[in-house]
Length: 173
Image (cartoon, rainbow, N blue to C red; front, side, top):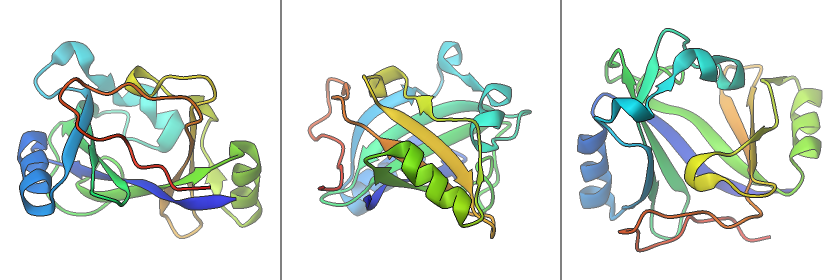
């Protein structure tokens, strides 16, 4: 049922700086920016995300980019307002805040998590922006020990920003 880790999410205080680190130090490439930094029209309010994944309602997402790491999982970078301090914690703090597993059947996977003590957030939720497509969905769950997991299924093609040279890595069936 689980194919593998599809992406990890990391909240940072400076999205352009983090992108450059991943590009230069790890050979990553930017696939797309759902929320380009410095574009207040594209910000995502925390109160809208809170019921989906526990994001602090008093914060806003001011930057959100998807990067590809060679032949491995993708990395999703978040920037928030108010800005975070660079230390690990929940999705509104810097550091790895969740990991995502690719699933074929999101309902079956969610039920398995629930059976093993996870608390599910609202879902499943249709993907948006460059990730929109028939059947493309996510669903977040909090483990009993406080780790946020995102279930994701992307059966439809994604849209990539013009300079993207790679496609998003999806674990093989």
